[in-house]
Every structure is written in C-alpha cells, then in structure tokens.
Length: 230
Image 1: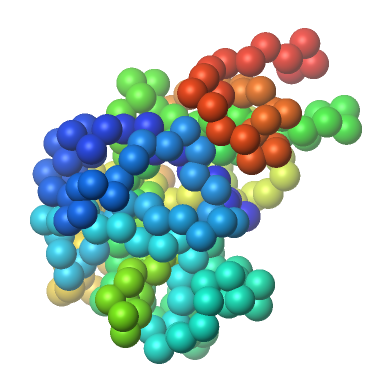
Image 2: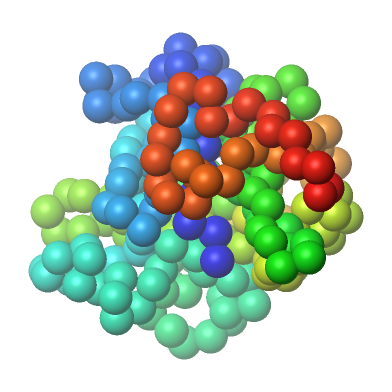
C-alpha cells in the first residue's frame, strides 16, 4: 500500500504545470511528506473542473457517507485502489467511469528490505518537477471531495528500489491527460491508459529512515542519506 506522497512544489509551480488555478490557494502548503494514514488533503484536478486545482481528502468515501473519515478507513482502507478491481461491482469502482482525477505530486516513497532491515527511498523526477498520478474521487453531500490513488503492477525502474510490495502508483503521461479527464473517453480506452507505463526520467534517493518511519517531517528529510549496507 502507498500511503505517503511528497509535494514540495510551490503553488505557482503547480499552477504552471497543470495550466489550472487553485480553487482555494490559501489552503495549499508544500509538504516534504504527506501521510495518508492521517486525514490529509491533497491537490486534485477533477473531470468536472479541469481548469481548477481543488483539494481532496485522501481516502475515498461513499458519496452519502456521513460518519468520520477515520471510522471508515478502519473498516475499509481506500487510500489505494488497484486497477485490477475496476471491472468489479464494488462501490469504490464506480467513479472510474465519470469521476477520474489527476494528483499532481513531486514524489512518492518505496521501501527495500535487505539483510533484515528496511530502507526508504524517495522517488521523484530527476528535474524535480511535478508529475501526475491517476486517481478516482467522490464528492460528498457536503461538497468535500475524497479520492483514492490508483495503483498497478510495478515494473522496470521501481522494482530496483522496492521489494515489499509488487504495486506502484499509476502515472498518467501528459499525452493522456486530456483523454483521462474527458467524459466521452470510452472505458476500454481508460483501461488502456492505466496499462500504459510512460517513460519517466525518475531518480531514487535513499533517505534517513529513523525520522521517516516515525512520521517526523523536517526540511531536509528528502536529502540523500548514505547507508553502508546498500
């Protein structure tokens, strides 16, 4: 499961990258680590408002759900949704038809186990610019948006820095952004977009694990950390 993201881009950088404007600009703050196990909001571009960057609570909730986010997440963790479940009849797969979103981020995290120890890596672009992760979302009756991060089978570069799970966040290449957000895109094409793995110039940076694992954030925590074991 992926429950930590990174978004160090400023508001101005995200708006330039997405060609959209923040709906609530004063509510966005760059963060070294975003921990989805807490109730957090992350930027999202939705099919309904393609020219706006909204904020979404990470962890999909049913549209008419009225209890606390934490209560639901203890029953059914929806931070991630695997692409293989999208053809099922589960309630959480219905948004894939008309409620697809894009999450602009600057990184995510993987873990590698070696000799009985775990080592966290920060995965980001070599140029440190934002990129898009695929998501689905619901809008609750009170107007709040909730979302899930879509994941698929890991391959290639990521597998070198991850051996705890065989999944990876699905990246949407800029060439597929318009189709992903278009209402008229056929479902078969949507599934094909999810199967594509755009060529991305990623880098993997080993980071200090003591504070990362204890959910402590500080300004330099994404800096490279040298482990003698790896």
